[in-house]
Length: 252
Length: 299
Image 1 (tube, rainbow over the protein chains, first blue to last red):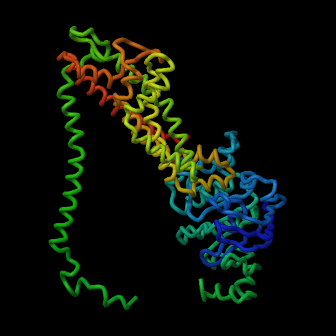
Image 2: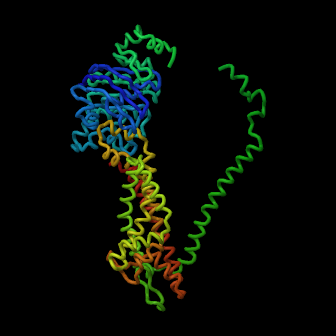
């Protein structure tokens, strides 16, 4: 099951330049939350703070409080512990090129020392089914490399890989920006189904996509969160002028 | 964009505008010819050397050459079997020491070495790459031979290992830096620790490039003579002990080539041929094994 996320006073820096200013928000469990905003507004940096990926960048720094369910992300939790409970899907599909489809999906468990072959088989099949890829690849999951799939299939493989470690939260950083409309449609359908079991946070440049998949939407601008509300409200009756300007295409 | 219409020449309206002129075709032809001729010039010495070695060496190459040890001066026949085995022994020692050290240092530089210490390691490694091999032989003499009180296969191996390290270090570093960062992040995102990510994802993705670097270093030191002169020293008999003077093919070739005997000169040619064939086949075998391992055998 998904868990809620609580973010309080989060600030983030790259070296000396501050990328996030005092972000506060509550992300609902088992819902999809979309983050929109122009390039460089800090939305990717923000979700990278949720699973402590931000600090892997040289000279990057985070301050503030993040709670994932009952877990305090920056206090008493190691990054590896935290990330096992938070799946992440990246902008460009990034399957491990040396691994078969099966090993890609099993990677999170295998690299953490899990060896029960029979259980792994079940998890791999289950994850590939959840990411709607199973029927397309089931005949050669051991023979084919993950990199040999099409772009859309690779992204669904990456989703399966993230799901295989049984996370409670799924972070998606512009997961469709490198995909064609048909693959995008498939991923969006998938997000709809996955909501039942996971809390989903999706960064997107595509406002229609935010409107289609997310119940809640946050609008970021210049490192600040300008507005955060029900998606419907953001797109029909935003309270902030800047949100309205952005969604009506006046800038960005 | 209808406004662009007028700017782009319409090929149907003005014939010849988009036709490739004779001069451009000539330039294209010249560039291709130049590229081909440089390839020929680069390959010519290699082919010439190999051809000449075959021409001079093949006559003295026989079963005895590959299975017997040298005959005393003045007697005809004999072979370099002990030198072939000795080279294999010394190269095995050098690889056992040099490959892990070089790869380890390369991993450090690529994954953790973005600091001043890393910069100094890079600098020292590049300097070490330029140190004459005879100097490295003297170093191995000082740190191994003088302590053991005699020449040995181990000392030869240490000398060659020192020569292998900088090449392997720098190619490993470069190959690891080529691995896209998104793969590291993908592994971190699954809750995989940093050292495990480095070993199982980064190193594995860069394997074939690193092997190329290792083979480059191996091929380079396999033919080295100078660092072996006062480390492995050479030996007219069989030796399998690590702490005893050991024959090596390049040493044997050197000794025979400067000797006054015609038969030894012929054997030196045959030795050079065998040395090149062995190096080429070792490199080819490893590359073949790696290619099969990475494409077919997904563990």
